[in-house]
Amino acid sequence: MQNCYIGIEIGGTKLQMVLAGDDLVINNSFRFAVDKARGAAGIREHIAQTIIAISKEYLIKGISIGFGGPVDRTAGRIAKSHQLSGWDGFDISDWLKQLVDVPVILENDANVAALGEALKGAGRNYEHVFYITLGSGVGAGMVINGNIYHGAKPGEAEIGHIRLTREGLTLEDSCSGWAVDKKIRGLIAQKPHSKLAQLCAGMDGGEAKTLITALEAGDTDARKILDDTAADLGFGLSHAVHLFHPDIIVLGGGLSLLGEPLRVRVQEAIRANIMKLFLPGPNVVIAELGEQVVPVGAIENLRKQIL
Image 1 (tube, rainbow, N blue to C red):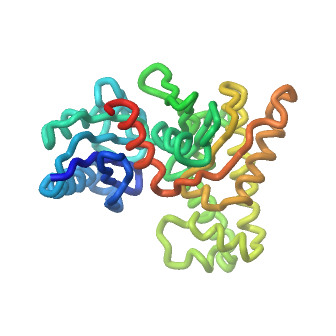
Image 2 (cartoon, rainbow, N blue to C red; image 1 turned 60 degrees about the horizontal axis):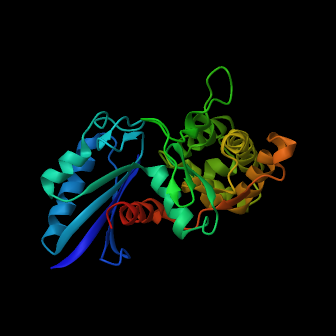
């Protein structure tokens, strides 16, 4: 049997698992949509079935996880999921070791994504890389000289929970994929004959995916949603600049697929909100690794820790 290492991404909308050989180059991957109604139990079932199938063909040597929420990486326990039930306090490392007795590494998904972009993606050759993921929620990670920055347990660079107002509006409330879905649904309720309403006809979630098409068509409503979201995002990231002063900020997650229109607006908003001494501020770039960013980072984390 050939050796293999497994990287796992557990998110709010998808589960990804990848295989890498002794060279830690990914050579196979599996993707599953998350059934929110089944919560953690459904995800664990997919993981168990896939590992059992893999173990029939490969000798598994290690598993590395990027989890969508705060974790206690030392204990191998999930602290909290803000999106799915059934994860809070779950000892995922022990559970996996009962399936296959190998080293298991647990990390926050944004941390391993930051590591992936810092080592293999848009953050290559920079010492201080700040990564933000704009997916179902909003998370972030900081990599310094090739190593993940870790704060006190159980939180890390939880930028999604930074408040934009004293009344409690958070960055995640405004800039996550689900938040943009909500903005679009609100617009459609007001303008049922708008371009966005046409594009979203029959959809029940995931409306943010239509934003790029509406922008390309020159839709003013889509531009207003983009402008408001980017302004809040840049304002939130200005706090990260003041705290960490990174060399580069990498925008990842589904909303980063908006590309240059989002990047330019976020760059401008950061510069408008940081102190003059820090100008022009860090470069803002779009992530390069796409949907593979968390699995790639998980494999790189495994490389650093057990090989």
